[in-house]
Length: 135
Image 1: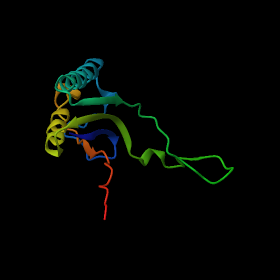
Image 2: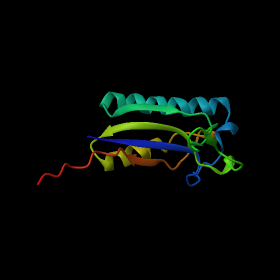
Image 3: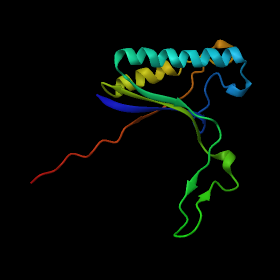
Image 4: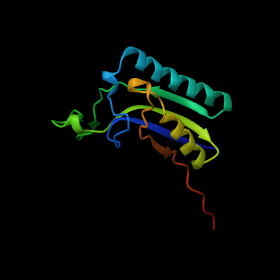
């Protein structure tokens, strides 16, 4: 089994087919989308492939170290251009092909007008420990 992170982006990924921002959806459309996400997660719980998932607020700040005794540095003047993660799901599956299959299904979550979003999801494998070399 291998763990993969499925990342959903507010921005920073290619535009989806149904490219109406979620803040412009009706309450019913938001509910249908969340129901799809929850049902998808529940199905994967049943197969033992679901590890965790969360939706994230669109607000966020990049922070970095700026030297000993100095306060951290945040975004700067161009925060609106950064990539923002909308949410994520961790799955534990047999391999890359299954991760891609599930990401494709998740991409069909409904959006505006109840139509599938066809959003791009980023599929990232968890980093595994390198093989131990003995001589």
